[in-house]
Length: 242
Image 1 (cartoon, rainbow, N blue to C red):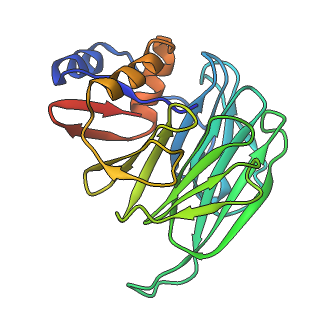
Image 2: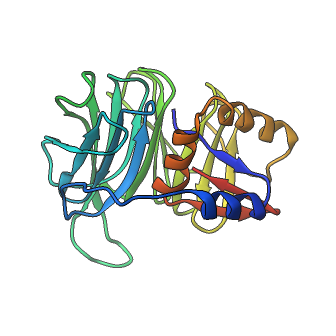
C-alpha cells in the first residue's frame, strides 16, 4: 500500500515545501518515530523506538499509544486497509563489527491496531528496514542485504540475496513488479515477484506504473508520505519520495 510519489523536478518539490503549512503535533511520546502510514485522510499509524506504535483517527491532531507487545525498535509500518497492518522491527544482539547480528520481528494486526501479534521472528539476521504488503497473503520485507517474501500472510518467508547491501525501502506496484531503494544510491527492480533483482534506471514504463499510484492519493497522503517517510533520492534528475 506504500506509494512512491514521483516529483518531476526539484522546482516542484521546492514549491510544495515552501507553500505547505506544517503545525507540530503532540505525539505523546519521547521515543523516536521513524515511519508513518496513513490509510485515509483521518486514520494513520506511526512507529518507532521501544516498541512504539501510535494511531490517529483525526488526521494527526491526536495520537493514542497502542500496545505492540515488544520493546524492539520498530522501523516500518504498512497497512492494507483500516484493519490489516504490518510492522517490522529489530534489536541488536550485541555490537561485534563487522559481524553484528540482530533479532528481527514482524508484527500483524487484523483489527486496526487494537491488538498486535508477533507472527515471525528472525534470529541472527541483519537489521530489518521496511515492509510492504499488497494483499493479506503476499508481502515483502527488506533488511541490510536481503529481501524476504511471504505468500501466506507472514507465517513463512523465503529469502533472496539481491547482490546489494543496505536495502532500505521496498514497494511493489503489483504481484510481479517491485522496486527497492538501496542506501548506496541504487534502485533495484524485480519483474518476477521478487525472485530476482537487477539494478535499473527508471524508464517511461516504470514512471507510468508509479504515476498511477500518485493520482490515487489525495494531498494529505502525498504530504504525509513525502515528509513522514524520511526518504529522498535524486536520480537522473528525478526526485523520488516515499
